Amino acid sequence: MRHMPLIATLLGLSLLGCTQKPPGPRQATAPTAPPVTPATRTISGLPVAATPTSLGCGKYARAERLGKLPKRVREASGLVVSRRDPSVLWTHNDGTQGRLFGVEVPSGKLRAVVRFPTLRPRALDWEELSAAPCAAGAPSSRCLMVGDTGDNDDTRLTIAFHRFAEPNPRGGKQRVTQVETMIAHYPKRASHNSEAFVVDGKGVVWLWTKAKGHTALYRAPFRRGQAVLHHVARIDTKPIMVGSEGARRRLTAATWDDRAGRLLLRSYGAAWELCLGQQGLGAMPQAKWHRVTVAHERKGEAVAYGAGGFYHVAEGKRRHLYRLVRQ
Picture (cartoon, rainbow, N blue to C red):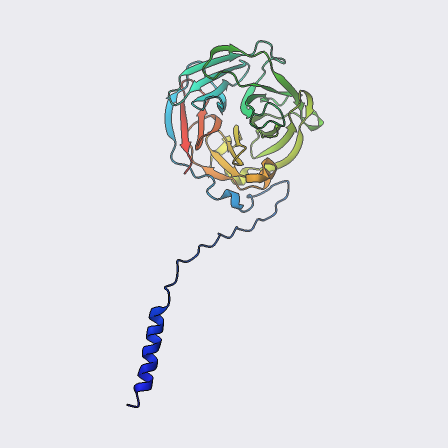
């Protein structure tokens, strides 16, 4: 009977364990943000580490081929989703034509043709199209801005940005006569070729030059009349675009989602997404470029964010539109 106290003790401990409540589910802990490495304003080499806003950046499903562009769109060089009707894309031809086309998705059928009979200066080399607020304090207002910024010979002393209220995306033939124009020049009256610009919610124009191996970022608040583009940063794109396209490593288009803080840049055959979040476009020089796999195109010069993803298309007659959905 000398073992009785030991047995009682063990039995008591067993019963005590049966009366305790089972442990609850493990509480999830918030992910730890990766450290952000500071970068200089002139970026040489690979971009810095991703910030928390870049989580999930650049992840899209395989490109879906849609309908062909109408015959009148021979050199699509700008692309914007209509904010009046998201089933229509606005685009224009590269060069001096100076017309805007409303194209239905997914069919590619032509729904609007817009002329600008009173536009001054006349179109020299339209290269890009962007959604824009109609005034600095009205980010939800619906205007468009076209950039006459092309300069293949690097001889232009000024470039032009034209802002106007978005036309009827299904209005057929139309004319726009009320246009606000900003005539801008680079510092020291330098000349640069550019095919990519966006406008943020505050009405600031952000522009990237087109050059092999690098790009320069400029900015200027939109204002009617004369303006000077301010240099923001020079970015070395060689390590970013390495192995992508050989001699065609030049930026040809851009699109900006002001609400999500996402920027998409493309070259002739590739694309990259930069997730800037609330930092805005001023953080672009230090941001990580996430490669996005787009459909194979020889001369892609147009890209536009849409609901849940983006569209892209290349120059050329009867080119297919493509849509990529965010994963």
